[in-house]
Length: 414
Image 1 (tube, rainbow, N blue to C red):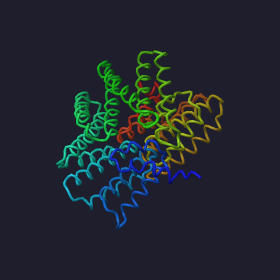
Image 2 (cartoon, one colour):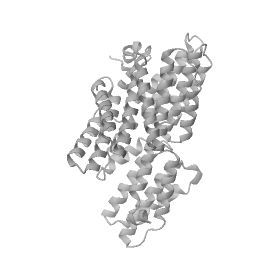
Image 3 (cartoon, one colour):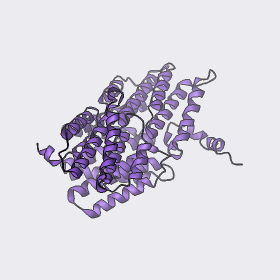
Image 4 (tube, one colour):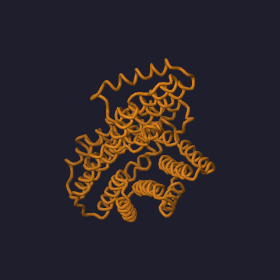
């Protein structure tokens, strides 16, 4: 009988020895976790001949598992493995490699849970590097550029965005000696930065640059070998096209954007990479998104404090409020309000972004109930203002946008 686990290990035996972990895209999140556990166990054995390499690989595997599932525990395991690798360094380049891995963990923590302090910690790690080999210096430059791109997107200042774009250009040029997945990540970051700045400034040059990067990624990332990279590029292209369609009020472009999201979702299944699936759903989500899909997205991203989890919760509450209002079901609205109020009363035990999502959700419910009862909703402006400020403080612009969209015109004018 074909033994899937054993034969899969044989199939990837050579791939395990490679520095490029792109092969992980072929296996699901559960198998990534199994690989990470196996590598960490091997690294901890007294008989391990290359403990530094094994601990570093275990850290990268746990980091990939966290990226796909949003589990804090996996991020912490990655950090512990990197710390264990630091105990086995014998050269300045190995010390630099541990610092780079630590910076990658901080960067992912920010991407998943927000908190600009994570970016500051990662930049501190990146700026203190003293690498000797060109390949290590290239890896450090790639990390530094990606961190600066995230800080630039938070600030939104044109000069900062341009500086970050220049750093990404330079890092991409020097990444030729690095594993292909590093170049892919740099291109995705450069495309995201160019799209955001291009849409905001109506800059055709930046939009063309983003289009070239995404087209190159989609063409080179085969669905048979790099399905997740391809899906991320398709989803980003869809988000950019939808934003432009909104500005131009172009229904044909909007339909093309939706088609790109559908193509991204077709690249993998929810269990293969739960957070990628949720990210596509949240980016694609319109007012007519089925409540069942939003509930599934919320279930796949329940880790406390997760940005995507907060977005999924807020979208699900907005959909439930709209459905109850359409059915003139005041009892259901009151019941939903009671559930959210109990969560809000937890206070310090609630993660800030989850709290912000609940504030926006409560505002949706209060406004729906007020419209049905012909009364004025109370404290809606305050709820949304506090949610907006919390999302800004934690570096979650997508949640900030949801708070702005939920704000009634009368409150916005005031």
